[in-house]
Image (cartoon, rainbow, N blue to C red):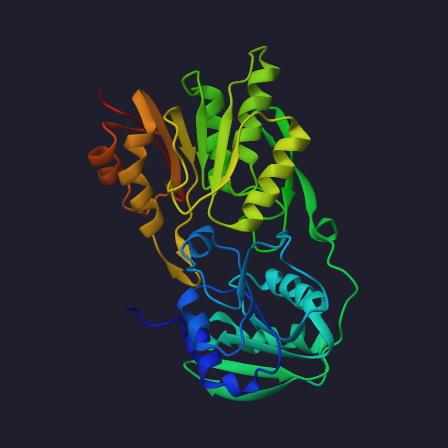
Length: 349
């Protein structure tokens, strides 16, 4: 069995701090649960973690910040694990205030290398009496008693909207704290969209993998409509709950046709597509990690129809071209600069 994440190990070392009913925000490894007393609520924003959770007596799992299992004023101890995006910490602390019962205890745990020291200012803003109670497993553990509770948690309050304009076509795009490129599109996505205008995908049902805010699928259909073409459905899939929430909102706002799925890689995808388009992530926390994309590329051929196209944008330094050639077929570079490259490959029949 692999070791638990450092922050989870730090909680186990300090499990004596837990009183009453427990709520965990930001769980990344469900094997932690069997070693904690009393049970409670555990929230993860990762579809794979949620799907792999075994049935455990006393534990209720929640996937994402819109899960109906999130009931207010029910937890006596709320543990918040530090997210990789600093903006998401305020999001999690607001949810903690909603979940907490009167007089509840708040515990914040995070790794030093991921910025727990800098996060303390945000913690003190909602829990001025918080103090550090331990340093363990390269983490800090902060505790606040009698944490102030909140009457509600309004997801709409945290959602932002912005306009993405590419090749003369605009779409409205939703954002939430912690989502990739929240507030504005990254240069790689804009380069990808330009190639989709210059060299459109083959007609038919398509998939946007690692869809983020849903900008790619919505823009493709908006571009098709602007050119007088009936839009083809574009499904969207992402592992992160905020991405699924934002994509559903973006699709609704732009009247985009297609299913939005929460999935770890392509595990929940059953359809074969005429095209798959993606701007895949390559970070896990503070580390460069291409594992998800490498796994996706190995699986993508099985979800492409014969002759179907993969269109992928990635940082130019990442070693994807040879892998795409092995898994999909001959590769063409459609656009490239010092930062990003857009690749196209068609599945061989």
